[in-house]
Image (cartoon, rainbow, N blue to C red):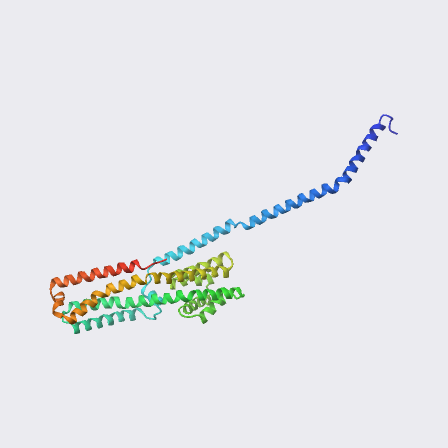
Length: 330
């Protein structure tokens, strides 16, 4: 039995415990609700932070992408600086000539020009010989350059359609290699021929990115370089290939629109250059027919020859300057 002095203390302690219990029972639901709300708010905040961290690009992945892109650009710049050899130029022109065939055509063109000028004029031996040498050196070279430029133009015009084939094929579930094989069969030349080379490189065991990297070496155009960069980046770092190639196709079509606009705006300047360049030749030809004695000193006298050579040099300089002014590269 507790002593009489402890009874009031025990009663007060029991009363305090009872009051605390009543208060806890009364307000527990509100306290628990607030605690749960705080937990939920904390969870939501953590989720938002996680989403923000996930939305932020990974620094290491971004550095890998930049490094890969820099390597690809350096490789393409080094290959662009090197001047293509004669065999490469003929291959890019779509010609199956050998070097022996090329030099034989140079000799035939030069010999034909020499004989024609020698038989049609009495200027002596030296002028026909110089003219024949110029034709032999420049004729086949200009022909290969013309065929090469025309083939590059056809490739650039057809290339966006080939990229659209890859985009549609990837969206439908086909592998990129099968899309390239479709282009190598159903597309138009020279795109079909170049993609056939890519498919053959893959058949020999090269990965798709390395096989595509050889395309700008055969077709040194910005379109081919862009395509090689997109394929290489996707194969090394991943990503949506159809979306990337779809954007590339749009960019290439916009470039074609810009080229057409430039051609339309520079048509007047080109016509003026053609008229100005051909006018002296027409005048000399008409004077030779109508009044040959009047223009004869221009070809027989020493002063006339010097004047004629100076006029030809200045006319060529003016034509080249106008051609440079109306030629845009972007």
